[in-house]
Length: 479
Ligand SMILES: Nc1ncnc2c1ncn2[C@@H]1O[C@H](COP(=O)(O)OP(=O)(O)OP(=O)(O)O)[C@@H](O)[C@H]1O
Ligand SMILES: [Mg+2]
Image (tube, rainbow, N blue to C red; front, side):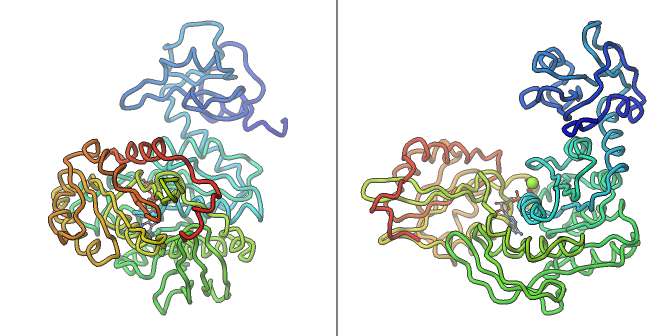
């Protein structure tokens, strides 16, 4: 098999129990479910989603150079389309994923939790890459198609696999865990995220604990010692036969224990005892929450037998991605301001983390801290109350100006002291002028809300309106 081949077609036929029609390619380079990102030589799997049916794009896939397509039986007529016909393409992709896991000799880590899955997964990708070949989920591909797709792409030669696992409802993680069969499972934390689909936070903990279902008795669980559901999750791990637990956090009994740390504007410096080994490292992105995540990362590295020192060194390269804390310095008359883009995701836990990070970000001379906040979604009936509760957190931080939008954010807005109330609007559109008018040299402006609250357009507006600041003298002075 050529070095860049992922599968032989014969292997796919066996895995999916499909019927081959048309000319059979010998090798497959990759797996795609989206023709916009498909590479020549990939197998295209036609998945039927909520809004689209992948079968509509089979022709595009062939035009872009797909070697093979996997489709439902009888849907595609052309003799010229080499295809594997199956009863259900999503099930076929799962079967390929299961075959990939079976052939793999890699150490496999599953990362779940209410917040910080992608941040932790990406840090693990970096941390393990200096030690071996790492295969990890793309973006937040953590659901009923994201996990099988990531598994189906698992190269046989990988040394480590890192899989993000997510859910909105009970029962979703268990089948994903059984496909992944993790050697190590990380639960970053348990918080009221997607609480609108649950009766209690304990139910969320139980849903996260489903990640233990696919583990064998020699697997390890990496659990947050500071989280209210730590004991609960330990019990669930043991019930599932997973006895090896590595706890992380500030708690004095944590196996991986935070020592001293300094939160800088754009990074953190951390000392920790990781399963008994002392390490000091720089974390390339700021925020206390990322420091705690990094303890989970290093614990998982130790649990899969990776090189702790190399992983700690790699954490210096961590960067906050777009929408999750990415920073830009933008020029404004006489200087520049810092934009923190948190527009991808918001819930009470990540909102607190973002406010605290904003508080720790240095302003330039005369600069202010500005928080632009949109609704946190999927919180169900407790939404208004969870927004109101955050008012005290914002009021107690060093935020100078708040611009807010959305029905629920009005509750937070009402709880703020008048002195920091900048502007309220019913939706993010209504804040556009206020956001552009607000920024001055030396300011730090953080924009956060759930994706559906459309705070991203405000980020784009500032980026379009103000150029990226160069290394002009006016730039010096802001930390
Ligand atoms: N441990 C943490 N506690 C609180 N907030 C966190 C933590 N880790 C990351 N965050 C913040 O939460 C937001 C989402 O982070 P991330 O994308 O890593 O989470 P996720 O669990 O993958 O989310 P999703 O469910 O959308 O895939 C970001 O703003 C990030 O800075
Ligand atoms: Mg994610």
